[in-house]
Length: 321
Image 1 (cartoon, rainbow, N blue to C red):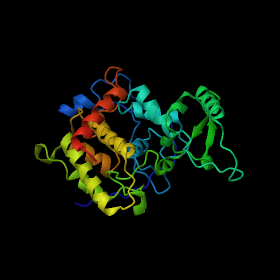
Image 2: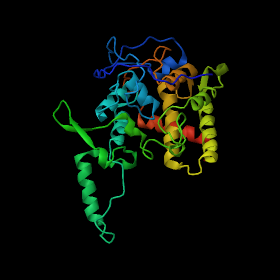
Image 3: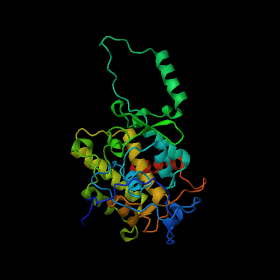
Image 4: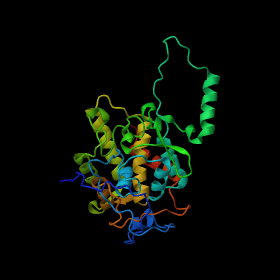
């Protein structure tokens, strides 16, 4: 099988991300699960898929890239705010809180060693550190999240003024490639950092993903299929990458990615193969295959508890790592 991952020419215009019109259902079990009840009217003619051009910036995350390719994030991948991320993620069925949690976490400043004026300079006392932390949380409650998830470094902190006149942080999508934040070793579709490219989708890895479907004659991925795929990737990378960084934190993220695939595009236990083919090969939302995009009513949106519940199921199926 040959996978065409080369980008096609795309416009350099930057339309403001806006929601698309709801697609019609094909009546399969997945159509009822992924966005069964869309309550937000979606505008006609928006959300058109356009592959990224060489000048566009993209992340190592297929979901983020797909949202940019559909213009729900700025197509050039530049100067994106946490509010932009939250709005886009709500269109794939995440609850407002879960979308905001993901979005604001990546906008934190990634922890880096702080040089002191001299090797013998004393470290800040506990009370001073506590007060500094408290002030930061009062100014921005999202500061309570683990800063390890943040992708911003002191050298690339940038802000812009939002429509309310407040200065907000912005980032470019390629900043999400910072290793050790949300990007981690043993991606399903990318190489490990020490293998040279943790950013670009790899045709051979995507082929492994697509060949893993065993249900309905290969038309459906079950949770067991995706868990077995991750388990094989873990075993393979432990042999290929002697400096592999894959502990409980990375495993939680990796299982979370499988849980999102199952919950966003499927019914929580299975997902159609053609949906994941569009998602991984073209970094396109599988709208024309029948999946429906749109904000869900509050009782159907994927929240933190629902996601964590599925993550734990995935971890149990994968077993000890």
